[in-house]
Length: 203
Image 1 (cartoon, helix red, strand yellow):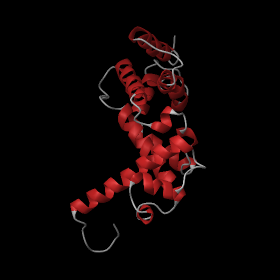
Image 2 (cartoon, helix red, strand yellow; image 1 turned 180 degrees about the vertical axis):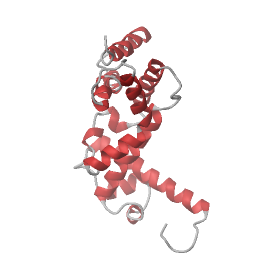
Image 3 (cartoon, one colour; image 1 turned 45 degrees about the horizontal axis):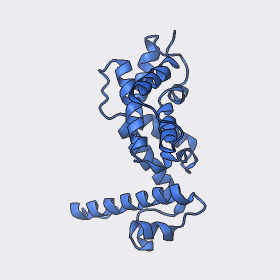
């Protein structure tokens, strides 16, 4: 809505939010199938079942759509990774929960661009804005790493590097399993979690 002196009816806001989410979901699906260069606003409108002009009520242009999709996916991943995690848990329990959250998110196909390894190539805002957003969304991960480093448990390296060495192995392995590259049973999964944990702790 705009800054005029009226309050939108809650039902109208709900409908607008639903359309926006539908457009974002359609964009993500099409990007996973056709890539960035194969994407058009007309394709998005058809996939989302909205008029082409409707898209521009929510997004200024294609770049704005892709920027907002990036933020939307990042917010979704942050919510998934922190599900069931509280700061009072032992650090290793938090780590294991986060790792498995990412594993199940990827296996369930909830984030097509993550599954296909395309998310990192998605256009986004400036690096400074992106860093600020990531710090805000993934505060539970940062808290875990910072506590671990403060007590001498984790290696004293940048949190992003710690994440790449540990939590991100979950998505990478899940993608391999989806693509038929390997099959991991429950015992092997626990061994993988422990191996990724060992990669970031001090010995």
